[in-house]
Image (cartoon, rainbow, N blue to C red; front, side, top):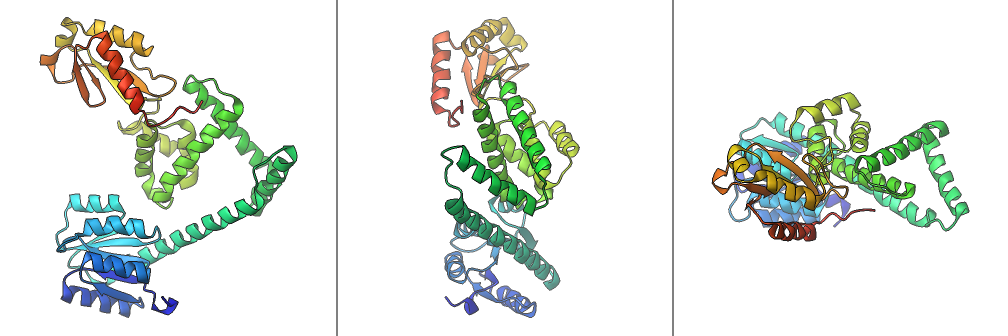
Length: 367
């Protein structure tokens, strides 16, 4: 398709009068736009016209707006979807934002509000395109100029390149070395906090991997300061806790003071500043469970997992906890592993349960 025929905005909505009004408003605002009356036609138009912004109605016959949003996220990372609907609810707004909607406009809305939302969406799309272009350029540069170092001299050449890049963005050598030294100390601290003994290079590569994972999460929110809590929630879900080096990295990336990041981390119960396993093992110590042998059940698990209550194993597979009540006194004594409840399991059964969870473990240990 010729670049002259590319669009700024595509409107996907089955209401003819409304879409015509949107098209006229957008054209008066200087935007090239087109209309599609259902989801499949809209997605076809998006693939060929490559717009920056897509307006999507939630209630349409056949393919609804949420399904269209899902497909849009797979089409191009630079597209900014905006939901337009006359049937908006808090739940639908939250669900839309989770899938990738940038804004949520309830019909009817003023033309100025539509143009303002589209203007902001166009700006965000431009930023996303710039980031994608920069990443592609970096890949090409990396392929051409950064071969895998074979010896000390190759590494020195790579170091010169990094030092040159630091100077180009206003970072002097001492500052660069200080930051690298700090990250090295954080690598050592992190390994020790997990009870792991690692070679220095392994520890450094591990936290580099963690910081890249954090970057990938923040990139989903375009490194916006306002997305701090959602970023922290995603990190908590990814790592099952909030490691210190990642919290400092988030603060630096989003330009948020470390004090504010830690205040939020300490305020919400959803966050943990201590290492937690991918699987939580909870032994009920309430009255019913206590009188029916909870202490013996806890002892079996302590020996099996080599943990005391409140501890997490060095591989971050399991966290052992005691709770006052699990709400199933008729099953006493009971242990819950994640969302599975087990009534007075024998040692043999416990071993089988733990073995099953270990086989399901998706996050490999990086020794």
